[in-house]
Each structure stands twice: as C-alpha cells, then as structure tokens.
Length: 119
Image (cartoon, rainbow, N blue to C red; front, side, top):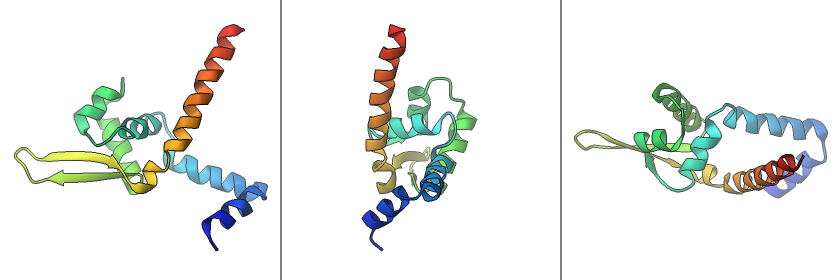
C-alpha cells in the first residue's frame, strides 16, 4: 500500500489516528527533543554548539536525548578520526521531513501568544 493511501486510511479511523499521534509522541516526547531537532534544522552541529543553542539543557540530558533521537532514526551521529575526536550531529532524511511540522507549530505558537496577550 502506498504511503498516501496509508495516511488517508489513518485519518479516517480515530483509533489509527490516535495510534499515529502516539507514535509521533514516542519519538519527540520530552522537554528537549523539539529544541534539539529545531537547532539541527539549521545544519550540522557539534555537541557544544547544541548545548549553547539550547538554554538550560545539561550535558547529560543533551547526550541522552541525542541518543534517543539517534535510536529513533531522527538524528545521525558522525565521528571523525581527529585529535581530539570530532563528533557532529545532523538530522537524517526522516528528521528533515519534520521541518514542516515545526513550522506549523511555530506559526501556531506566535498566533497563540498574540491572542493570549490580548486577553
């Protein structure tokens, strides 16, 4: 079954729709995964660059979340044989497809912030 038909089928069934949402949440769940993905949308980053880009994340948490995202096929880790060793992180092709989702979330957040400030 091609992907478009699968997506249409999921959208017609509330049980399948909720299961698909849960699949998504299993990959991006947590306080730090979306900021990590958002930071990597702008290209490869080394660990310290990510740490600087994401306010208040601890090195331990960043390492854990990067491993989770790597295990879920969203982030790719490349180790270069240099002295000292250089490690870069980047989004996989699957991770890059998340860009449109993040854009919609950012648009919603900006609009929501404006509406709530008017109250």
